[in-house]
Amino acid sequence: MKKLQELVRFPRLMVLAFGLQSTATLAYPLSTDEAFCARVQQFIAGTDMTVDNVVYEEDTYWTTFKKSKPQAQPLTTHQYVGYQLANGERADYPVTVACKMKTAERIRTANADSGEITVAEEDRACQTWQALMLDDVYKALEQQGDSALMSRERIALAEENNVYIGPLWLRPELYQVAYTEDDTLKLRSKALHVEYRRFMPVPDSFMGTHYCTMIAPEYLAKLLQGEAEAPPLQE
Image 1 (cartoon, one colour):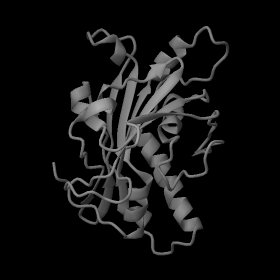
Image 2 (cartoon, rainbow, N blue to C red; image 1 turned 30 degrees about the vertical axis):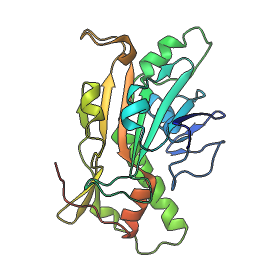
Image 3 (cartoon, rainbow, N blue to C red; image 1 turned 45 degrees about the vertical axis):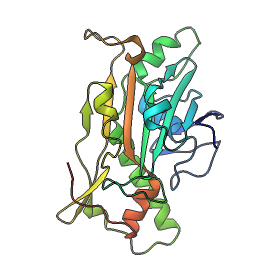
Image 4 (cartoon, helix red, strand yellow; image 1 turned 120 degrees about the vertical axis):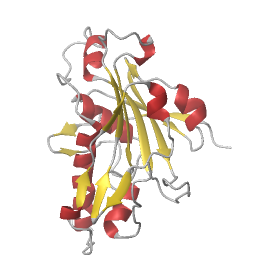
């Protein structure tokens, strides 16, 4: 049996303006590689700091992944890839990605004594990442010669679903990340964003966290290529 979780350490991932590249892997943007949430963390927090990404095996969502907490020092993220569609069917490719990350504010305060570091003043949204990933996936498919891609005019980002407590972010595990409305493919994301300095009482482990649930590149590519079809919104 495979290990329930594996700690994967990567060299520094460089975040570039209007695009992302990794010195660790060339799998992105068409694959959910083992650096995926590390890359999202850097984009969300606007940092080029090294990120340790903990990758969880399938079927550990309600066991080890549920209990996991990201860290600001050393900067550590947690990644779970889901293979089930919104109707409960299992796909043979990644469908969703859940990332547990820290906020830019928390990273900055936790590493104040680490010398000069690059961190944004405020976080980007999960949907902002998803918009960039859509651009990257679409461009990669065009470059590999896919000529019958869905028109970009038929693709839109739904309003981000922001929740305020962990249980609402975790449930449902089968979160519908894509749906069809009229003739438009809409991409959804769900976010939990808890500021580090917050008056509402929450456990310390949740302070300064930014969680994202979003579509996996493989599922997005299949939708764009017409190899999969998103159902209407089911919730």
